[in-house]
Length: 315
Image (cartoon, rainbow, N blue to C red; front, side, top):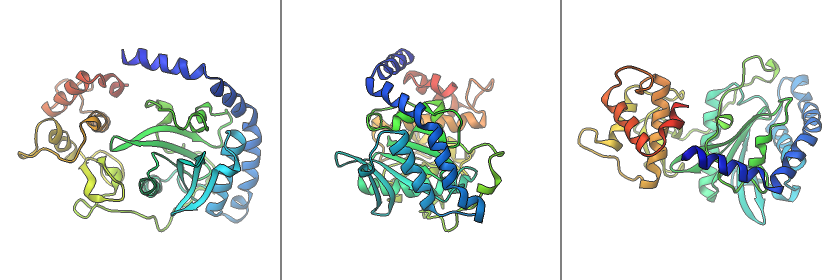
């Protein structure tokens, strides 16, 4: 049933005239975008570094030439946010730009940028965020106490990335279910060495008790308020915390040391459990991965199956 609805929604989107028009625009303008992007990065090759402004210029080219935003839709430095895209005055997307190459191969830099942009978006009540270093672009929706992947593209891809439609004027406000091609990841190591830089002075907000940034929690009520961060389950480097993960699951499904987690909305629970399950999969702990899973993981699988979410976790 879930996959039938997914297919029906996909067909509905592809039947939209705005979708077909934007896809044609992406295909037609991608080569010119790549050429202009290469020109903007010449100073990086020439001097070994380039400012965030270069990334902002690349993003401006992307959204106005490849996609269908106008220059008037792009707003700079609004309450600390590097770029905000607006449509009819409505804030649709908050973007954090970093120096070229600062994110594509730098997991710590990615986590720091996501922490920043999530706080800026939360302060301005915007539900869609994005980060870019002129090499990669990742966008996500803020919902259910976490991030729902929307778009991930390599900005030097030779193939026009059609998933950019989800960041177009008509696509940005439409819900997109989790897609494998939108998952945040680091780019392959063989990318241009000249663009590999570190991002100094990252702006981290750390939980005073757990000494962890926001991305390590399965639920984030407000990225700017550490009191709303619930269920730590990842280590600071983004890998699953084998000790805290089962405790986080138990806090929802049963209890941990006699206590249940508070402050979560019931509608957010399926997404939080999905987040915890994906971490368990990375550890190889779920029943479909091992013969005798621990009771906590077996119970998690049963609940996800009841919610119709187990198949997506297995995939």
